[in-house]
Image (cartoon, rainbow, N blue to C red; front, top):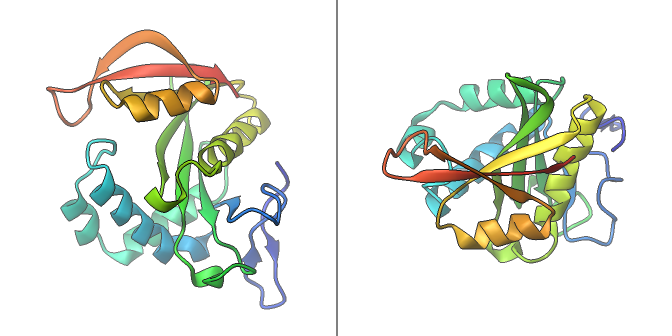
Length: 197
């Protein structure tokens, strides 16, 4: 992972293009404050597509003002506590910088385990699943985690979401055997998976 966005001639940070090769259909980079509107659109897509996987409802997210999204994105664009990464079609792709984001993965510190990053809100738009974007997003979180001195990743998957479970296994995550209640829907359980960052 490299230092991050570089300013363009217009003063707007350009996403670091070294995370994913230029020949890929998307570039994975840490969100910038300028991604807020596109991140809001992706968040609404995420909630409509996989409502059990995230911790808010589509209605709640849609009702939140844009300023709230902008503040959240600004807070995770820098720092070592929480980071969000997106798959972006890029300026040299159809749709350019205003094109819809294609995926997302976040990471945050685990309060009780200083060497652990919790991976959250992982999503790839349906048309881009199976293209390698999931691995690139997880690798971006892993690189950031290592830079922050946290050598391990953990994520939670709803029990029964076999497609996600298998995808994470292919990326090196191992089921720990730990099962926890879903934080929003008490009838569901989540399983924990870990791997080195």
